[in-house]
Image (cartoon, rainbow, N blue to C red; front, side):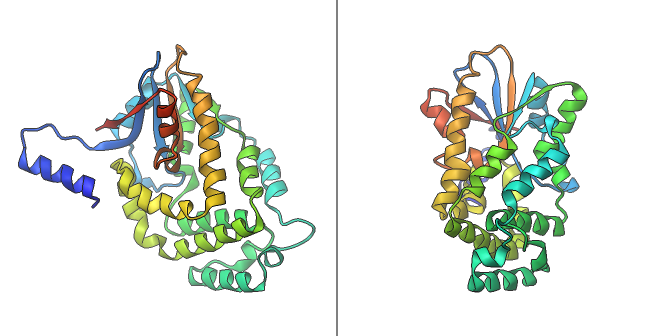
Amino acid sequence: MTRLRFLLVLVCALAPGLACSDPLPLWELKGTNNRIMFLGSIHMLRNEDYPLAKGINQAYRDADTLIMEIDMDDIDPTQTQITVMKLAAAPDGKQLKDLLGASAYAEAREKLEAIGIGMSVLDPFEPWYAAIVVTQLRLMQLGFDPGSGVDARLAARATQDGKDIRGLESLEYQLGLLDGMSAGAQRDFLITTLDEAENIESEVDDMITAWKNGDTQALEILMLKSVEKQPELYKRLLIDRNRNWAKAISELTDDSENYLIVVGMLHLIGKDSVLVMLDHAGYPSQQVLH
């Protein structure tokens, strides 16, 4: 339990007459002419992690439009596969071993064997995409499902309800940021991912609990710290994208429509979050309580 949550529990225990509510992974912008809400998404969840909190469902119902990292109702599976393969495949007939070097490749193979994943699955790819595949496969081993992620569930619901869905960026742009990393940064990304994959089983329930409780301090420790230790990844994955998003979102503040913006939880925590950038632009936010 973080110090903040301990203090909240202590206050509620000592003052039972006080109305105490837990925060959600949900924020509302202030100073706008419309209602703009932010929901931190976990991209892969389990069925047991549902239903979503009532406050999240209410934010969805109040929104005229959903804005996501990419426009999920316009995704063409065939084109998506072409885009991924174009960017993720190791170039010039090479394989992962050629890009990592013999020593790092042997280290990666040893770590993969420890979690029951065969190296051949990763051999055709560049290190950055191999890291993504490792994360997906490891979470799937633990019962997580990409189709049960918050953004996937809400996108399907919005399509059924006829709500407009928009994207903040294209898939090609998103993956291109990772593909453009230096060889050293890609190698560090993969090795760090493999290190974390070994221990994720013991941390994953803590992460989901912290997410449900909107516990940003715990989420920074569980999700953000390792990314901060990789400067090039941190800049490309978070700072650059958050800056672009903050500019685009600030242009919606005079709109007549209400928006629910659903992005990965990493983008809403820490000193370089999109919420901090919007605050600097004159649009502070307030976390929503249960």
